[in-house]
Length: 416
Ligand code: PMT
Image (tube, rainbow, N blue to C red):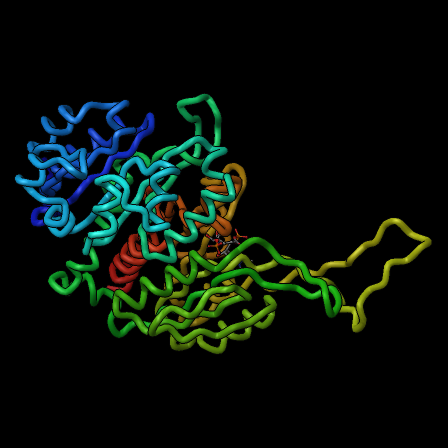
């Protein structure tokens, strides 16, 4: 038993679909119960080829539901009643077939019917072979799932049961539990007024997204930042009661609710927008992927291909280091940077923490395609002088709340 009991009044309907990861749902049942949740289990036919209903019955202490048209089960708790019983419908593992069915509104077995009849949010933890995950059909279904408001936990990256390596592994059980706890946290925020008001009266200034450094009127130098991490942090800061100003490079994202968004394109524009707001800033977070260099000059007309040369050189000049400028300003806001690294992540991150005079740095391994640039998930370690905190692989929106709480707590500690 944990002492948190954070899920004490929560009813979780755990759907288990067919896949080698189905056995991990058994451990998940126990871990959710550790936090006080009541768990009922629904298994598809596929799931029952990997693990028996008896296991889940013993673990959950409740009968396991397997059939849509089972008069005996319906007499106990009908499927509509079961769908309405749940505070969260959590499907672990969620197979490619299940995801395809649920996003297209199929109700051809008990679990998909429960998904249609539910009132509670639906969360899925996908698990499948990496090629199945990468298949455009699955990826389209995942996009559709997000549009339908279905929460997604994972998948992770690594060695798979079949020996392949790649994305598609079930998110680790402790991380699924953490995501469930985070999911229920906002609904506790009214009760937990102290946490909701952590940054009340404070101003948080953030940068997000890439910068674009023009070469000529049609070409530019940039990077793969989508802005998702920075926008999620802006939204989390607003949720914690802060006044939030977001200086954003070019992205496809809409400004989070209640956030003042200043759109810029180049590093120089980003620096000017940041420095114009710095005097009113309590906490600065630099999540933007700012181009370190820009072309020394921008051609007025489109550069033409020449017949006589096969190569071309573009002279670059250094851009200002925006965050180092923020940290050097007087008074200095509490300054938090990111470090995007492909190797020796911890060392480079600590180096940047000291060199740029930051209060905290969030280290991001951007050699991985499942996290960091343009991914929906992220996994980071936060460093500060004398401390560090690794964070699990989480949806960026969930991770952002964790990060803002940590940043907020350290800021308050530092300024008291
Ligand atoms: O936008 P997403 O697709 O969601 O991806 C998120 C992310 C990977 C972009 C984000 O998590 C991240 O790691 N952002 C920092 C990217 C980066 O440029 O890191 P860096 O190690 O090069 O820079 C270190 C710090 O200095 C950063 O806080 C950066 O904003 C800042 N910097 C860098 C250069 C510069 N000229 N000015 C700066 O302020």
